[in-house]
Length: 460
Image (cartoon, helix red, strand yellow):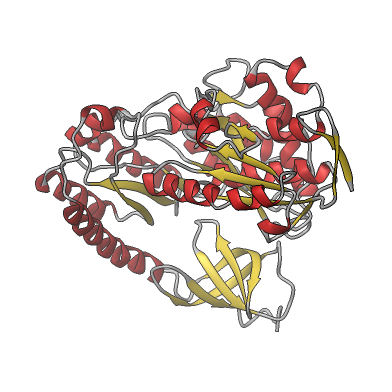
Protein backbone atom coordinates (compact mmCIF):
# COMPACT_ATOMS: atom_id res chain seq x y z
CA UNK A 1 0.00 0.00 0.00
CA UNK A 2 1.24 3.50 -0.81
CA UNK A 3 -0.07 6.93 0.23
CA UNK A 4 0.41 9.85 -2.17
CA UNK A 5 -0.73 13.48 -2.25
CA UNK A 6 -2.92 14.20 -5.30
CA UNK A 7 -3.10 17.44 -7.30
CA UNK A 8 -5.72 18.86 -4.90
CA UNK A 9 -3.42 18.42 -1.94
CA UNK A 10 -5.37 15.51 -0.49
CA UNK A 11 -3.75 12.22 0.46
CA UNK A 12 -5.00 9.18 -1.45
CA UNK A 13 -4.32 5.48 -0.90
CA UNK A 14 -2.93 3.47 -3.77
CA UNK A 15 -3.54 -0.19 -3.05
CA UNK A 16 -1.88 -1.89 -6.03
CA UNK A 17 1.84 -1.17 -6.31
CA UNK A 18 2.14 -2.67 -9.76
CA UNK A 19 3.41 -1.27 -13.04
CA UNK A 20 2.98 -2.16 -16.70
CA UNK A 21 5.37 -1.05 -19.47
CA UNK A 22 4.59 -1.19 -23.18
CA UNK A 23 7.58 -0.65 -25.48
CA UNK A 24 7.65 0.02 -29.19
CA UNK A 25 10.62 0.77 -31.41
CA UNK A 26 14.38 0.54 -31.34
CA UNK A 27 16.90 -0.89 -28.88
CA UNK A 28 17.25 2.56 -27.33
CA UNK A 29 13.60 2.38 -26.28
CA UNK A 30 14.16 -1.11 -24.88
CA UNK A 31 17.01 0.25 -22.75
CA UNK A 32 14.90 3.23 -21.67
CA UNK A 33 12.04 0.95 -20.61
CA UNK A 34 14.44 -1.19 -18.63
CA UNK A 35 15.62 1.87 -16.75
CA UNK A 36 12.06 3.02 -16.07
CA UNK A 37 11.21 -0.45 -14.74
CA UNK A 38 14.29 -0.40 -12.50
CA UNK A 39 13.32 3.01 -11.16
CA UNK A 40 9.77 1.89 -10.43
CA UNK A 41 10.94 -1.24 -8.64
CA UNK A 42 13.30 0.94 -6.64
CA UNK A 43 10.17 2.73 -5.40
CA UNK A 44 8.53 -0.54 -4.41
CA UNK A 45 6.46 -1.35 -7.50
CA UNK A 46 6.35 -4.82 -9.09
CA UNK A 47 5.70 -5.70 -12.72
CA UNK A 48 2.44 -7.05 -14.07
CA UNK A 49 1.62 -8.41 -17.53
CA UNK A 50 -1.89 -6.97 -17.45
CA UNK A 51 -2.41 -3.20 -17.76
CA UNK A 52 -5.78 -3.45 -16.01
CA UNK A 53 -3.97 -4.69 -12.87
CA UNK A 54 -1.45 -1.84 -12.80
CA UNK A 55 -1.42 1.35 -10.79
CA UNK A 56 1.19 2.81 -13.15
CA UNK A 57 1.17 2.33 -16.93
CA UNK A 58 4.07 3.45 -19.11
CA UNK A 59 3.81 3.64 -22.90
CA UNK A 60 7.28 4.04 -24.40
CA UNK A 61 6.65 5.13 -27.98
CA UNK A 62 8.34 5.19 -31.37
CA UNK A 63 7.49 7.51 -34.28
CA UNK A 64 10.19 6.61 -36.79
CA UNK A 65 7.36 5.64 -39.15
CA UNK A 66 3.78 6.84 -39.30
CA UNK A 67 2.52 3.31 -38.64
CA UNK A 68 4.46 3.25 -35.35
CA UNK A 69 2.97 6.58 -34.30
CA UNK A 70 -0.54 5.42 -35.20
CA UNK A 71 -0.01 2.26 -33.16
CA UNK A 72 1.13 4.27 -30.14
CA UNK A 73 -1.83 6.64 -30.35
CA UNK A 74 -4.22 3.70 -30.67
CA UNK A 75 -2.72 2.01 -27.64
CA UNK A 76 -2.85 5.24 -25.64
CA UNK A 77 -6.48 5.91 -26.57
CA UNK A 78 -7.41 2.41 -25.39
CA UNK A 79 -6.31 3.37 -21.86
CA UNK A 80 -8.91 6.13 -21.45
CA UNK A 81 -11.58 3.73 -20.11
CA UNK A 82 -9.12 2.34 -17.54
CA UNK A 83 -8.37 5.86 -16.32
CA UNK A 84 -12.07 6.68 -16.12
CA UNK A 85 -12.73 3.55 -14.08
CA UNK A 86 -9.73 4.20 -11.83
CA UNK A 87 -8.87 7.91 -11.44
CA UNK A 88 -5.85 7.01 -9.28
CA UNK A 89 -4.23 5.15 -12.20
CA UNK A 90 -1.05 6.95 -13.30
CA UNK A 91 -0.50 6.97 -17.07
CA UNK A 92 2.92 7.94 -18.38
CA UNK A 93 3.50 8.67 -22.07
CA UNK A 94 7.19 8.44 -22.89
CA UNK A 95 9.54 8.41 -25.85
CA UNK A 96 9.66 9.93 -29.30
CA UNK A 97 5.92 10.66 -29.48
CA UNK A 98 6.55 13.13 -26.66
CA UNK A 99 9.91 14.41 -27.88
CA UNK A 100 12.07 16.82 -25.94
CA UNK A 101 9.89 19.92 -26.33
CA UNK A 102 6.90 20.91 -24.19
CA UNK A 103 4.07 18.45 -25.01
CA UNK A 104 1.27 21.07 -24.94
CA UNK A 105 -0.63 19.66 -27.91
CA UNK A 106 -0.46 16.16 -26.46
CA UNK A 107 -1.78 17.41 -23.11
CA UNK A 108 -4.79 18.92 -24.88
CA UNK A 109 -5.40 15.79 -26.95
CA UNK A 110 -4.92 13.29 -24.11
CA UNK A 111 -5.98 15.00 -20.87
CA UNK A 112 -6.13 11.64 -19.06
CA UNK A 113 -2.33 11.27 -19.28
CA UNK A 114 -0.64 12.25 -16.00
CA UNK A 115 3.02 12.40 -17.03
CA UNK A 116 4.78 13.15 -20.32
CA UNK A 117 8.42 11.98 -20.43
CA UNK A 118 11.01 12.80 -23.10
CA UNK A 119 13.07 9.94 -24.56
CA UNK A 120 15.64 8.42 -22.18
CA UNK A 121 14.22 10.36 -19.23
CA UNK A 122 12.47 8.43 -16.43
CA UNK A 123 12.79 11.53 -14.25
CA UNK A 124 9.33 13.09 -14.73
CA UNK A 125 7.53 9.86 -13.83
CA UNK A 126 9.67 9.03 -10.83
CA UNK A 127 9.42 12.62 -9.60
CA UNK A 128 5.64 12.56 -10.01
CA UNK A 129 5.32 9.34 -8.05
CA UNK A 130 7.55 10.47 -5.20
CA UNK A 131 6.41 14.12 -5.27
CA UNK A 132 10.00 15.12 -4.48
CA UNK A 133 11.84 18.30 -5.35
CA UNK A 134 14.17 16.89 -7.98
CA UNK A 135 12.58 18.89 -10.78
CA UNK A 136 12.70 22.14 -8.80
CA UNK A 137 16.36 21.60 -7.96
CA UNK A 138 17.27 20.53 -11.49
CA UNK A 139 15.30 22.83 -13.72
CA UNK A 140 17.47 22.13 -16.75
CA UNK A 141 15.96 19.12 -18.60
CA UNK A 142 19.36 17.85 -19.77
CA UNK A 143 20.71 17.81 -16.20
CA UNK A 144 17.56 16.10 -14.99
CA UNK A 145 17.88 13.41 -17.63
CA UNK A 146 21.52 12.84 -16.73
CA UNK A 147 20.71 12.68 -13.02
CA UNK A 148 18.46 9.70 -13.65
CA UNK A 149 20.76 8.17 -16.28
CA UNK A 150 23.61 8.18 -13.77
CA UNK A 151 21.75 6.08 -11.20
CA UNK A 152 23.12 2.59 -10.64
CA UNK A 153 19.73 0.88 -10.62
CA UNK A 154 19.29 -2.91 -10.51
CA UNK A 155 17.72 -4.82 -13.35
CA UNK A 156 13.97 -5.37 -13.14
CA UNK A 157 13.08 -8.47 -11.11
CA UNK A 158 11.88 -10.39 -14.18
CA UNK A 159 15.31 -9.95 -15.79
CA UNK A 160 17.66 -10.19 -12.82
CA UNK A 161 19.88 -13.22 -13.24
CA UNK A 162 18.13 -14.07 -16.51
CA UNK A 163 19.17 -11.31 -18.88
CA UNK A 164 22.29 -12.33 -20.82
CA UNK A 165 22.48 -9.47 -23.32
CA UNK A 166 21.72 -5.86 -22.39
CA UNK A 167 21.82 -2.44 -24.05
CA UNK A 168 23.58 0.66 -22.75
CA UNK A 169 22.82 4.04 -24.37
CA UNK A 170 26.05 6.02 -24.77
CA UNK A 171 24.94 8.77 -27.19
CA UNK A 172 21.57 10.40 -26.59
CA UNK A 173 19.88 12.32 -29.41
CA UNK A 174 21.32 13.06 -32.85
CA UNK A 175 22.63 16.16 -34.63
CA UNK A 176 23.09 14.78 -38.14
CA UNK A 177 19.47 15.23 -39.36
CA UNK A 178 19.07 13.10 -42.48
CA UNK A 179 16.21 14.56 -44.51
CA UNK A 180 13.88 11.61 -43.90
CA UNK A 181 14.54 11.16 -40.18
CA UNK A 182 12.38 12.48 -37.34
CA UNK A 183 14.71 11.36 -34.54
CA UNK A 184 16.73 14.62 -34.15
CA UNK A 185 13.46 16.54 -33.77
CA UNK A 186 12.16 14.13 -31.10
CA UNK A 187 15.29 13.06 -29.20
CA UNK A 188 17.14 16.37 -29.35
CA UNK A 189 20.75 17.26 -30.00
CA UNK A 190 23.52 14.73 -29.69
CA UNK A 191 24.86 14.22 -26.16
CA UNK A 192 27.49 11.70 -25.08
CA UNK A 193 27.20 10.17 -21.62
CA UNK A 194 30.24 10.32 -19.32
CA UNK A 195 32.52 7.31 -19.75
CA UNK A 196 32.61 6.64 -16.00
CA UNK A 197 28.81 6.32 -15.92
CA UNK A 198 28.84 3.88 -18.84
CA UNK A 199 31.55 1.77 -17.19
CA UNK A 200 29.69 1.83 -13.88
CA UNK A 201 26.51 0.66 -15.58
CA UNK A 202 28.35 -2.08 -17.48
CA UNK A 203 29.95 -3.41 -14.28
CA UNK A 204 26.58 -3.36 -12.52
CA UNK A 205 24.98 -5.34 -15.35
CA UNK A 206 27.77 -7.92 -15.28
CA UNK A 207 27.31 -8.38 -11.53
CA UNK A 208 23.65 -9.16 -12.26
CA UNK A 209 24.45 -11.89 -14.79
CA UNK A 210 24.72 -9.97 -18.06
CA UNK A 211 27.46 -11.34 -20.32
CA UNK A 212 27.03 -9.18 -23.42
CA UNK A 213 26.43 -5.45 -23.75
CA UNK A 214 25.50 -3.45 -26.83
CA UNK A 215 26.40 0.23 -26.86
CA UNK A 216 23.69 2.37 -28.43
CA UNK A 217 23.60 5.66 -30.27
CA UNK A 218 21.78 7.06 -33.28
CA UNK A 219 25.31 7.53 -34.63
CA UNK A 220 27.32 5.57 -32.10
CA UNK A 221 30.67 6.35 -33.82
CA UNK A 222 30.24 10.01 -32.85
CA UNK A 223 30.63 9.19 -29.17
CA UNK A 224 32.81 11.84 -27.53
CA UNK A 225 32.72 14.31 -30.42
CA UNK A 226 30.47 16.70 -28.48
CA UNK A 227 32.73 16.68 -25.40
CA UNK A 228 36.54 16.87 -25.77
CA UNK A 229 36.99 15.52 -22.23
CA UNK A 230 35.56 12.15 -23.26
CA UNK A 231 37.37 9.35 -25.10
CA UNK A 232 36.33 8.40 -28.61
CA UNK A 233 34.41 5.15 -29.09
CA UNK A 234 37.64 3.18 -29.65
CA UNK A 235 38.94 4.34 -26.26
CA UNK A 236 35.68 3.50 -24.53
CA UNK A 237 35.77 0.00 -26.03
CA UNK A 238 39.28 -0.48 -24.66
CA UNK A 239 38.08 0.36 -21.14
CA UNK A 240 35.01 -1.87 -21.38
CA UNK A 241 37.17 -4.71 -22.68
CA UNK A 242 38.90 -4.83 -19.27
CA UNK A 243 35.72 -5.61 -17.31
CA UNK A 244 36.01 -9.04 -15.72
CA UNK A 245 33.05 -11.32 -16.42
CA UNK A 246 31.96 -9.46 -19.55
CA UNK A 247 32.17 -11.81 -22.53
CA UNK A 248 31.08 -9.73 -25.51
CA UNK A 249 30.72 -6.09 -26.58
CA UNK A 250 28.73 -4.79 -29.56
CA UNK A 251 27.82 -1.30 -30.73
CA UNK A 252 25.28 0.21 -33.11
CA UNK A 253 24.39 2.04 -35.25
CA UNK A 254 27.42 3.28 -37.17
CA UNK A 255 27.55 5.89 -39.93
CA UNK A 256 29.88 5.59 -42.95
CA UNK A 257 31.15 9.15 -42.52
CA UNK A 258 32.30 8.67 -38.92
CA UNK A 259 33.93 5.24 -38.81
CA UNK A 260 37.61 5.89 -38.11
CA UNK A 261 40.55 3.60 -38.70
CA UNK A 262 41.19 3.67 -34.93
CA UNK A 263 37.72 2.25 -34.33
CA UNK A 264 38.17 -0.54 -36.88
CA UNK A 265 41.56 -1.44 -35.45
CA UNK A 266 40.09 -1.53 -31.94
CA UNK A 267 37.38 -3.96 -33.08
CA UNK A 268 40.07 -6.17 -34.62
CA UNK A 269 42.38 -6.05 -31.61
CA UNK A 270 40.00 -6.27 -28.64
CA UNK A 271 39.05 -9.87 -27.86
CA UNK A 272 35.61 -9.06 -26.40
CA UNK A 273 34.43 -6.73 -29.18
CA UNK A 274 32.38 -8.70 -31.70
CA UNK A 275 33.32 -8.62 -35.39
CA UNK A 276 29.90 -7.36 -36.43
CA UNK A 277 29.28 -3.86 -37.79
CA UNK A 278 25.93 -2.22 -38.52
CA UNK A 279 26.59 0.57 -41.02
CA UNK A 280 23.65 1.69 -43.21
CA UNK A 281 24.01 2.64 -46.87
CA UNK A 282 20.28 3.62 -47.22
CA UNK A 283 20.55 3.89 -51.04
CA UNK A 284 22.95 2.78 -53.74
CA UNK A 285 22.70 5.93 -55.86
CA UNK A 286 24.68 9.12 -55.27
CA UNK A 287 21.88 11.53 -56.18
CA UNK A 288 19.49 9.81 -53.78
CA UNK A 289 22.16 9.92 -51.04
CA UNK A 290 22.55 13.67 -51.57
CA UNK A 291 18.78 14.11 -51.32
CA UNK A 292 18.86 12.07 -48.10
CA UNK A 293 21.70 14.27 -46.77
CA UNK A 294 23.75 11.23 -45.87
CA UNK A 295 27.19 12.79 -46.39
CA UNK A 296 29.01 10.11 -48.41
CA UNK A 297 29.04 8.55 -51.88
CA UNK A 298 28.46 4.99 -53.03
CA UNK A 299 32.16 4.67 -53.85
CA UNK A 300 33.11 5.79 -50.34
CA UNK A 301 30.76 3.16 -48.91
CA UNK A 302 32.32 0.50 -51.14
CA UNK A 303 35.78 1.45 -49.91
CA UNK A 304 34.59 1.31 -46.32
CA UNK A 305 33.25 -2.24 -46.79
CA UNK A 306 36.57 -3.25 -48.35
CA UNK A 307 38.44 -1.72 -45.41
CA UNK A 308 36.18 -3.45 -42.87
CA UNK A 309 36.83 -6.82 -44.46
CA UNK A 310 40.55 -6.16 -44.66
CA UNK A 311 41.10 -4.90 -41.11
CA UNK A 312 38.58 -7.18 -39.33
CA UNK A 313 38.94 -10.74 -40.68
CA UNK A 314 35.63 -12.59 -40.87
CA UNK A 315 33.58 -9.46 -40.09
CA UNK A 316 29.84 -9.55 -40.69
CA UNK A 317 28.22 -6.37 -41.97
CA UNK A 318 24.63 -5.22 -41.65
CA UNK A 319 23.08 -2.36 -43.59
CA UNK A 320 19.82 -0.42 -43.87
CA UNK A 321 18.10 0.43 -47.16
CA UNK A 322 15.12 2.67 -47.86
CA UNK A 323 13.27 2.06 -51.13
CA UNK A 324 10.97 4.55 -52.83
CA UNK A 325 12.61 7.72 -51.50
CA UNK A 326 11.15 10.85 -53.17
CA UNK A 327 12.34 11.11 -56.73
CA UNK A 328 13.94 7.64 -56.80
CA UNK A 329 13.75 6.41 -60.39
CA UNK A 330 13.74 2.81 -61.56
CA UNK A 331 17.35 3.27 -62.70
CA UNK A 332 18.40 4.63 -59.32
CA UNK A 333 16.73 1.72 -57.57
CA UNK A 334 18.59 -0.64 -59.90
CA UNK A 335 21.85 0.91 -58.67
CA UNK A 336 20.84 -0.03 -55.12
CA UNK A 337 19.93 -3.56 -56.22
CA UNK A 338 23.25 -3.97 -58.05
CA UNK A 339 25.22 -2.65 -55.08
CA UNK A 340 23.57 -5.09 -52.69
CA UNK A 341 24.14 -7.96 -55.12
CA UNK A 342 27.79 -7.01 -55.44
CA UNK A 343 28.68 -6.36 -51.79
CA UNK A 344 26.87 -9.44 -50.43
CA UNK A 345 26.35 -8.11 -46.92
CA UNK A 346 25.21 -10.31 -44.05
CA UNK A 347 22.06 -8.38 -43.16
CA UNK A 348 19.93 -5.82 -44.97
CA UNK A 349 17.20 -4.11 -42.96
CA UNK A 350 14.71 -2.97 -45.59
CA UNK A 351 12.09 -0.23 -45.33
CA UNK A 352 9.68 1.54 -47.66
CA UNK A 353 9.87 5.31 -47.49
CA UNK A 354 7.03 7.04 -45.71
CA UNK A 355 6.98 10.81 -45.09
CA UNK A 356 7.24 11.94 -41.48
CA UNK A 357 5.67 15.26 -40.60
CA UNK A 358 8.35 17.77 -39.66
CA UNK A 359 11.23 16.28 -41.64
CA UNK A 360 12.89 18.03 -44.57
CA UNK A 361 11.81 15.39 -47.06
CA UNK A 362 8.17 15.64 -45.96
CA UNK A 363 8.23 19.44 -46.23
CA UNK A 364 10.07 19.80 -49.52
CA UNK A 365 10.00 16.53 -51.46
CA UNK A 366 6.83 15.00 -52.95
CA UNK A 367 6.20 11.35 -52.05
CA UNK A 368 6.04 10.49 -55.75
CA UNK A 369 6.86 6.77 -55.85
CA UNK A 370 3.57 4.82 -55.82
CA UNK A 371 2.98 2.46 -52.90
CA UNK A 372 2.73 -0.53 -55.27
CA UNK A 373 6.12 0.31 -56.76
CA UNK A 374 7.68 0.69 -53.31
CA UNK A 375 6.43 -2.77 -52.39
CA UNK A 376 7.72 -4.19 -55.69
CA UNK A 377 11.20 -2.79 -55.04
CA UNK A 378 11.07 -3.97 -51.43
CA UNK A 379 10.23 -7.52 -52.52
CA UNK A 380 13.02 -7.57 -55.10
CA UNK A 381 15.61 -6.64 -52.48
CA UNK A 382 14.08 -9.03 -49.98
CA UNK A 383 14.37 -11.96 -52.38
CA UNK A 384 17.91 -10.98 -53.33
CA UNK A 385 19.06 -10.68 -49.73
CA UNK A 386 17.52 -14.02 -48.78
CA UNK A 387 19.67 -15.72 -51.42
CA UNK A 388 22.77 -13.82 -50.32
CA UNK A 389 22.35 -14.71 -46.64
CA UNK A 390 21.56 -18.35 -47.44
CA UNK A 391 24.85 -18.52 -49.34
CA UNK A 392 26.81 -16.82 -46.52
CA UNK A 393 25.30 -19.10 -43.88
CA UNK A 394 25.99 -22.24 -45.92
CA UNK A 395 29.71 -21.64 -45.38
CA UNK A 396 29.18 -22.28 -41.66
CA UNK A 397 27.94 -25.83 -42.27
CA UNK A 398 30.17 -28.28 -40.42
CA UNK A 399 32.16 -25.54 -38.71
CA UNK A 400 32.61 -25.36 -34.96
CA UNK A 401 31.93 -21.85 -33.68
CA UNK A 402 31.55 -20.25 -30.22
CA UNK A 403 27.98 -19.29 -29.35
CA UNK A 404 26.69 -17.24 -26.42
CA UNK A 405 23.42 -18.83 -25.33
CA UNK A 406 20.73 -16.42 -24.13
CA UNK A 407 17.47 -18.26 -23.50
CA UNK A 408 15.60 -21.51 -24.00
CA UNK A 409 12.69 -21.55 -26.44
CA UNK A 410 10.72 -24.77 -25.94
CA UNK A 411 13.32 -27.53 -26.22
CA UNK A 412 16.01 -25.48 -27.93
CA UNK A 413 18.53 -22.99 -26.64
CA UNK A 414 18.84 -19.76 -28.58
CA UNK A 415 22.20 -18.05 -28.99
CA UNK A 416 24.37 -15.99 -31.30
CA UNK A 417 27.82 -16.16 -32.77
CA UNK A 418 30.20 -13.26 -32.52
CA UNK A 419 29.15 -12.36 -36.05
CA UNK A 420 25.53 -12.12 -34.82
CA UNK A 421 24.27 -15.32 -36.47
CA UNK A 422 21.26 -16.87 -34.75
CA UNK A 423 21.97 -20.46 -33.64
CA UNK A 424 19.70 -23.04 -32.00
CA UNK A 425 20.80 -26.08 -29.98
CA UNK A 426 18.76 -28.83 -28.32
CA UNK A 427 20.01 -29.57 -24.82
CA UNK A 428 18.62 -30.36 -21.38
CA UNK A 429 21.53 -28.60 -19.69
CA UNK A 430 21.34 -25.02 -18.42
CA UNK A 431 23.34 -23.08 -21.00
CA UNK A 432 22.19 -19.57 -20.14
CA UNK A 433 25.06 -17.08 -20.28
CA UNK A 434 27.64 -19.60 -21.42
CA UNK A 435 29.86 -19.25 -24.48
CA UNK A 436 30.25 -22.76 -25.87
CA UNK A 437 31.70 -24.26 -29.05
CA UNK A 438 29.02 -25.91 -31.19
CA UNK A 439 29.07 -27.56 -34.59
CA UNK A 440 26.69 -26.18 -37.21
CA UNK A 441 24.53 -28.98 -38.64
CA UNK A 442 21.98 -27.00 -40.69
CA UNK A 443 21.83 -23.50 -42.16
CA UNK A 444 19.06 -21.36 -43.58
CA UNK A 445 18.75 -17.69 -44.46
CA UNK A 446 17.52 -16.66 -41.00
CA UNK A 447 19.09 -19.10 -38.52
CA UNK A 448 21.25 -22.17 -37.99
CA UNK A 449 20.99 -25.39 -36.01
CA UNK A 450 23.83 -26.99 -34.12
CA UNK A 451 25.02 -29.76 -31.84
CA UNK A 452 27.89 -30.16 -29.43
CA UNK A 453 31.04 -31.38 -31.18
CA UNK A 454 31.32 -35.15 -31.14
CA UNK A 455 34.60 -35.08 -29.24
CA UNK A 456 32.96 -32.97 -26.51
CA UNK A 457 30.35 -34.84 -24.51
CA UNK A 458 29.05 -31.67 -22.81
CA UNK A 459 25.33 -31.19 -22.67
CA UNK A 460 24.38 -34.78 -23.55
